[in-house]
Image 1 (cartoon, rainbow, N blue to C red):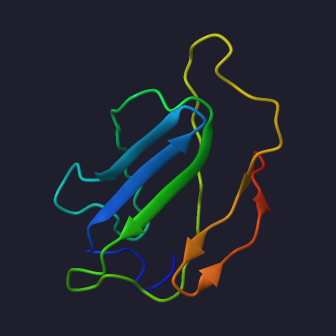
Image 2 (image 1 turned 135 degrees about the vertical axis):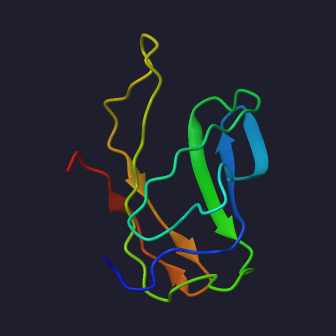
Length: 110
């Protein structure tokens, strides 16, 4: 684990798709989300955005320890259990931040 990982900042998520978008929704389920080594789960409700084209996760730099400076990212994607909800596409992710971006990275099943 990375020392100092986690954040006390307010974290938000936006979903964008080919049918529209869901504006920034604050991700909060308990008092101590986004702590080092933890897994947090959130349900974001909104209108159908269609095929997801972009996911924006951001924070407002608030709190005692808003960010650690070094980041290891784990991206987990879960699709619905409805028939036809999966994909055979080559899915990629690019993480953007105030210091640049990671470039496109393939998501694999590791």
